[in-house]
Amino acid sequence: MRILFFSHYFPPEVNAPASRTYEHCREWVAAGHEVHVITCVPSHPVGVPFRGYRPGWYQQERHDGIVVHRVWTLLAPNKGVVKRTLNYLSFMPSAVWRSLMLGRFDVLIGTSPQFFCAVATWIAASLGRTPWVFELRDLWPESIHAVGAARAYMPLKMLERLELLMYAQARSVVCVSEAFVRNLVSRGVPTSKISFVPNGVDTAMWTAGVRAKGRAKLDAGESDIIVSYIGTVGMAHDIGTVLDAARLLGRERPRLRFVIIGDGAEREALAARARAEGLDNVTFTGLVPRAEIPDYLAASDVSLVTLKPSDLFKTVLPSKMFESMAAARAIVLAVDGEARQVLERAGAGLAVAPGNAAALADAVRRLAADPELRQTLGAAGSRFVERDFSRRTWAHRYLDVLDRTRLPGYPAAVPQPSPEL
Image: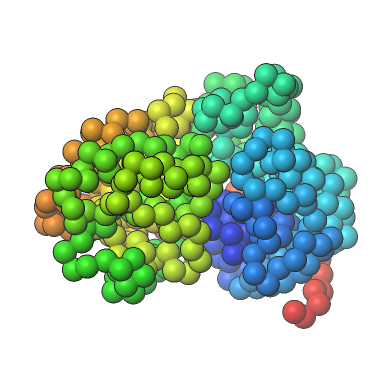
């Protein structure tokens, strides 16, 4: 097949949609398919191009056989509603225009977040008369309410109608959680067009971390207990509760350290709060290269997975949970719903109520005091993801969805020569 994937995020950016898109596309190339990705100049979350990149109308490169087309967008940091919305909207015309330059494809895929990426895919698919898949990673615009980012001027009802139109126009909808599937069915989306392809994990990547390298980067002593949060430090992720737990544990366990690895809209304010409150047991590293994250995770004794209390977040499966399992780290999960059910099925960690700092501190205290329990939970998680959430396995099941999505009886797209890069 000749496959075109629209994604706002792609490596070297470090977030869940970038990793999922790249790892699926890499597996499809290995299976013999021609895969193109239309994306932005990497700048998330700070809104400044990564080293080696420049803002411009068009750049092309290759990643493991994937042909990557980087189009112009209005760069903006991951904070502030107006600028981010303009960043999202500017992707649409750039992405659609570039897609028309690339010849015919067998199938198009548009992933969310952000939602307008799916709109761009629909427009491109309509112009090229090509079937397309809506990959649903975020129930948007509901998620705007969940993180408290809704504003009075936002036309949310109109956006919800547009969301339903996207489900109707897509030939297939791929959901990353079973709760998303139930949500769509309850809103009238036919089950025949819905497929479940969850967030998985590249197990080889996450077992390759070197603990000594990560501990050295963190300047961690032999007796230090490292409790890490690795991911976006955004409005949804409830790092404020992590700081509350760190304050509760600070005096009684001086060798217990909380390390927040990543960047996002809330990092600067939270780091300032930690300094103001004298939380010497909390470190913010900022953004680190994705290639180094396995070392940081290997250096950790406990991995935190947190989200704000919200009914919407009961439907999500955070990718960092699977990455922590693959690295055999004991997890403290502060997310209700489907994620908690998966964690308990795996036997990979302790679950607490989201937003409850005392419960979070108690769970960390328990794991810090019991290395044998940490090892048992970590080993259980590693076995679980290898069996049930291997990215490679789910990438090939995704290919089955794409094959069914192709127009029946329609001749296959002819591979197009690409310039050597």
